[in-house]
Image (tube, rainbow, N blue to C red; front, top):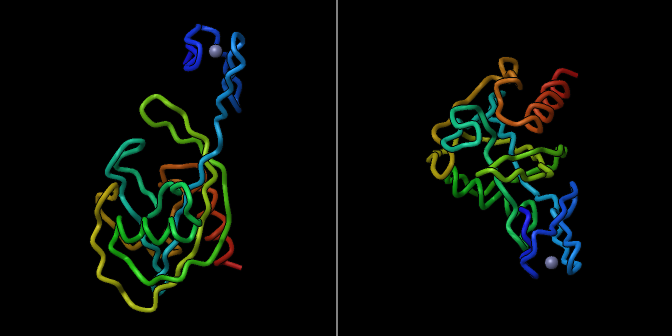
Length: 166
Ligand SMILES: [Zn+2]
């Protein structure tokens, strides 16, 4: 992005946090976007999604997605779980956050990913849809964080598997 959307001059300068126009003073902040993801446990196995779309189509993922304007993290997670898996009536428990970089159609987005844990008491009937190609249940002790698409997810799952061993 080089041209100022306000004055049209090629005077836009980019910094990691914002674009600013030297000619007219226009400023566009590149705010961090919030995302949510769920570590869903049923009897010691974790629900893992296979990504249907780029970035990293085919790699492993946790269910979740971007928080919409006006949503709480919990609302976003419930909406995403309904859209992606048709999973409803869950109780998300806050776990941790990690920053992430999400390249999409030649724009790099900085996100803060909020991780929740969900413990299921019975096996739900799940219908993968949206950006989830298929799902698998992986035993906690066989979970390898390195199989996951995003660095934030690898960090959160490493923390999760560590906390389960203690
Ligand atoms: Zn300008």
